Image 1 (spheres, rainbow, N blue to C red):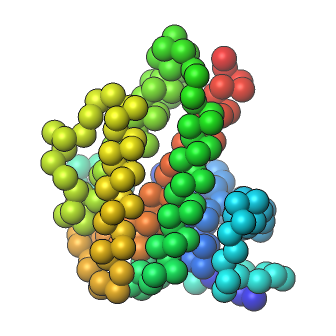
Image 2 (cartoon, rainbow, N blue to C red):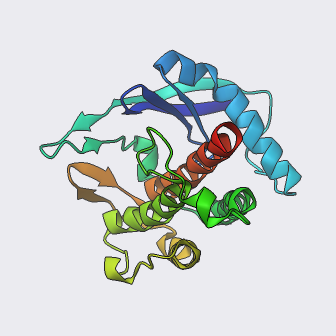
Image 3 (tube, rainbow, N blue to C red):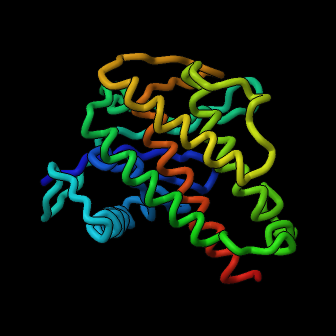
Length: 228
């Protein structure tokens, strides 16, 4: 079957190739060509993870070919915010099968994050990491939770920011419970919003939420392996 791709330079030297049939499935590279080269491995890895969790995506079957359907270059707005991709695929309303898939993958990603970080001492969580934007592992974990809240804010559906707990042990489950509650309510909707020059939809929120937690969990695992 043909898997359809969208590719964007989400940040400088950070290209992401998205697999539309598998929301949140991505390959990253420092160049466009590297990201595209890594797509087959990214698909294989995700399908293996889902298979290990006894979950099968009924519409996906090998062998795979790949088609680049859309390409997007990030645009800085007047406040230096980088406007990321809104693909035509993002306009497709969510279906019940998308919610079942998202629930399973979000649960798997959260399990991997907790496995990687549970039992870490405060000293490890708060040890400064040279060059890391979020400063520490605790900062990265907090960023995972606040970013998921932020995605809902882009749709105009987030709860008040003041209600976000500072403690990561409270923040992560509160935001995730909210995500799991709200996603089914968006089945079939054609809602689209625009914030800071960037367009958002339920499908875009879903793919970004799945991707974001996974990419930062792998980042934390690398830090723990290489710096601690």
